[in-house]
Image (cartoon, rainbow, N blue to C red; front, top):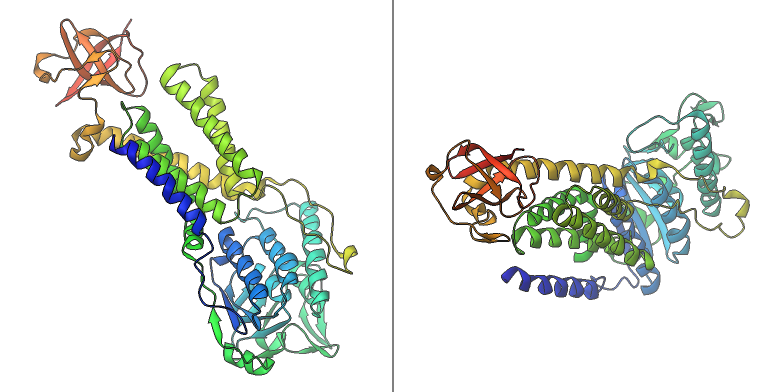
Amino acid sequence: MKSALLLPLLVCLSLLAFLGHGQAQTGSYKGKVVIIPVGEEDLIARARFEFMSRTLERCTNEGAEAVIFDLDTPGGLLWDTVDLMMNDLQKLKPRSFAFVNKRALSAGAMIAVATDGIYMAPTSTAGAATPIYGNAQEMGDAERAKMNSATMGMARAVAKRKGHDPRVIEAMIDMSRELKVGDLVLDTKDSILTLDAQEATMQLDGKPVFAKGIVDSLDDIKKAEGLKGATIIAEPTLFEVIAIWVTKYAAILILIGVAGGYLEMQTPGFGIPGFVSIAAFSLFFFGHYVAGSLVGQETAVVAALFVIGVFLLIIELAIFPGLLVPGILGFILIMVALVYTMSAWEVPLPAPLPGDSKEVPQEVGFNLQVYALGLRNFALGILGAGVLILAIFRFLPETGPFKKLVLTSAIDGGEAKTIPAATVTVGDEGHACSALRPYGTVQFGERRVEAMVEGGYLANGTPVRIREIQGPKIIVEPFA
């Protein structure tokens, strides 16, 4: 009963979180220089991209003087980076700068190229922006050429618009490109371009190769660009932090949700496992919604697929065990809903930039690697839940706080009376007078006792024999 009362509370808290999303802002950005830190793991979290997108929009709306990306990153998600480059940064009205504060590799280099000016720390590097799969799997030659062409087309369009030399970003993306400054070869056709601070600030055709100068700090950039506003570091709101955490640890929430749901279906009534499962999946979907993974009608469609999948699994496990079709279909629907939520299912090639329509390539098509992160998280969650469930059923009957999950009183099929195990012995025969999932009530002559079956399900009425007695735990098996 208490758990049932907690469910509306959870819904209310979720609604309050939704209503409060984005409203907890720190000070006005008007006239200020806004710093956006981009650290080691920031470009592999889609929620972080949403945070940067909202921050850039806010900078425009509130009239910030400038935006500086403080970059120290080995790279990250390609298509989310492209969207930030070609949409968010092109709509930004304040001036934008990149400070390569140690590393701006891969996606970090592409973000730098999308700003109005780039500065390097004395010991820093930038480049190595060729696309790779998240699991480091090698691309085929045709696939590599197609991906590089698409990426270069978009990066070239942005570089030209921002006044950077497009040949540099092309050499960072494609190994076949060569880059020279006079007689000095910065990059051969056998390597991918990565520049240090000195190389990045050399002159190529009267312009810097990559960066305007070498600086020691953000304040030096402000002095060089004549920026007068106070410096403020952009920080995620509470709900953005939740979204970042949820997208980063999605596999753990799936593990908890699946394990809790399964345990709930093995016990009577609605209790702690069910509440934990609902809370885990509510947090999972809410966090991804805030992160921007679900928008518009997608939210309703994904929710419907998930609920239908859960309903089909309940039919399989609790109503018609062994039918298989509802269970398989339900599992597939749940997998689709969860993986869809965690993945970018469509490659978001942005609209061409004004005057650069020829630079944007055609769609690169379907690629299973786009869904690699979602599939990996789902697999880890399911495997982890399986291990957790097996561990709980192994130690559950002897673990004090969890004994309440073991059937001790009213069960469909009659009341199970607490009887010392000594009153029954190994080899006694009887029949199940309730379903065993895996616990239930078994009748031996005039006695009804709690018993369990290992590794399966027994329907009401199944003939059983006591296989083993472990202290208070009676283990039965079916017999013909």
